[in-house]
Image 1 (tube, rainbow, N blue to C red):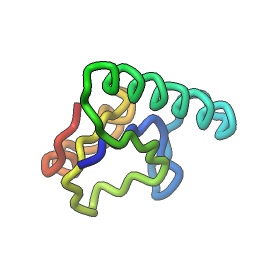
Image 2 (image 1 turned 45 degrees about the vertical axis):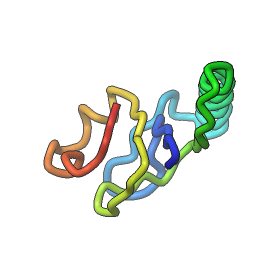
Image 3 (image 1 turned 90 degrees about the vertical axis):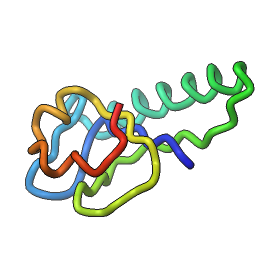
Length: 86
């Protein structure tokens, strides 16, 4: 199992982002992923943390999705109901 961090989406009709600058978004999201992994590892929880810039709500995934609230608000509920989103 992975934790996928969705802070922006770079495909499809709806392409929300954190800052509007993909380079800045990459750095911010990767820093968040690194810090989350560090904290989980300190608790002896060994989980892969993956930045997902190409989240596709039509593809099923067993992973936990950690998604920015603004993206959740932009996507229809019926697209998100089959995921474990926090």
